[in-house]
Length: 489
Ligand code: BG6
Image (cartoon, rainbow, N blue to C red; front, side):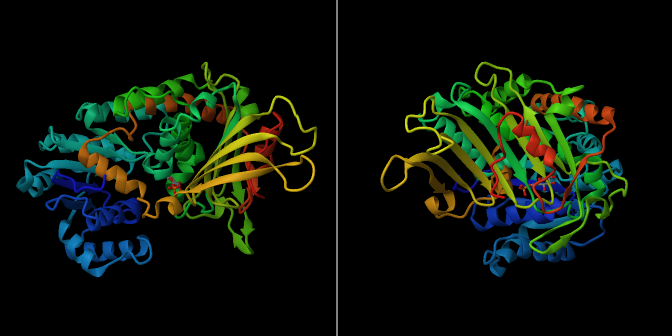
């Protein structure tokens, strides 16, 4: 992964002036350039409707990159070289007549790999693919990258997949879920399948329950227009949280290759017990933040965010109790939780093992007598295992202590951003960390009835104060089974 790519390519970014391009894609490409992972002849062509020339576009990108790369990583000389790879062309993707211009611009590199990155609204995916096809750009060497959200439901996702599939072979379609590009997420695979230690314990006989939390302190960050239509279930659960769940729960793939890994993930999605009808009330909680505060700073209510409907019923928080109906996991609840404007930013997976079968040292001494593995993805990347140990002094009083591994300290290397890794994988044609069509559709098949159940019961989301840990009902969801979220409140 540290070598320079041997593949010269044209990376064409649709939505080149958008938030994703400026905050994630271009900074990632800057790093790939700086660290010499891009082939010397690789070019980046950004497209958007704005009538800009390349110079003013480059200035805009320079401003963003210097802001979004880590402190001290912006280097003027590196930028000047990177800028030479970067061009801009105004183009309205909805207009087929504009595409011959694009074909002409790419003519010079007819033998190169072409990556078409659609960082646009999904409503534009199908037209973009058709127009690329109409000018002969959807050929053997083309790869198309689709950003989430892929649809709003199973039906709309299928429609997009059909339309893309009529132009691009599935092997050329890279559906991004940037969580799969995170180092710590891949470390979860390393932990499970690179160590013999955990595998015998990784099942219902030894695991009591699993918690997967992705909590953010940010609100909707100016994306109210999109978010108010989507909500946390479509924005986070359908993709990121279910993908994390798949990686925790899947069987070992036969090879670490795209089809083998994706087959195993799909089996988990298919084994999720449906939540529909009355179950929706018992096994899900949806919330929306009202005004609140964090560390003395006042925080607005969701319905005051820009472009959000004042009467909005959209959820900004979801908690779910999920069951996986297979031999390995029957009877083990997986609690999933995500929310915006929360007390703390943290993404973590908690594997709670069962208690010891018999308390040799007596009741009350060293409660709770179970081990816990915490895989933390954000803000820092670490793995910790809690063990019971004897507290120093007389008598056998036990106490929980933690074995901690912090990856930044262990490796002392810059952590790659998910997009760096994923962009390089697309260039190299490796789809292991991308979602296959059937996975996306299986996820929607499970998510749709939950959303339908919420709509059918006409209940508004439960309010929680911005800056808090979410609605009380999310705590009750676990308390009913004698569990509690692992938070330092
Ligand atoms: C995106 C969601 O996919 O992931 C955002 O659309 C969310 O709403 C973001 O904020 C979280 O990503 P990360 O990498 O910051 O955890």
